[in-house]
Length: 102
Image 1: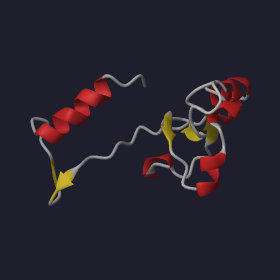
Image 2: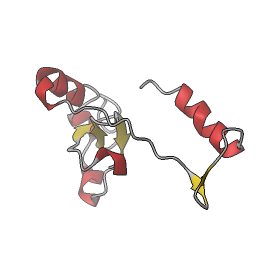
Image 3: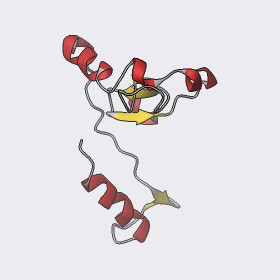
């Protein structure tokens, strides 16, 4: 789903193991993030059918399918210049990354 994931194949995942709580989402094993699927057909699939365990158990079982994480990150720029870390927008994003569990 991300540009830096280079077309990585994704896996279905639920955000809950309880039926009718949410629809299926997709898990990217390269960036370890969860996305809303583009297809409208996925909106009718209950995420509990896969549960919160499926992609992680699958990758644990088939470790040869675990991709190398891409170290590239998007660097925001204005007219070609990097935005300084003291900018409010950058500070908010950095604060969100520090609470991330990657």
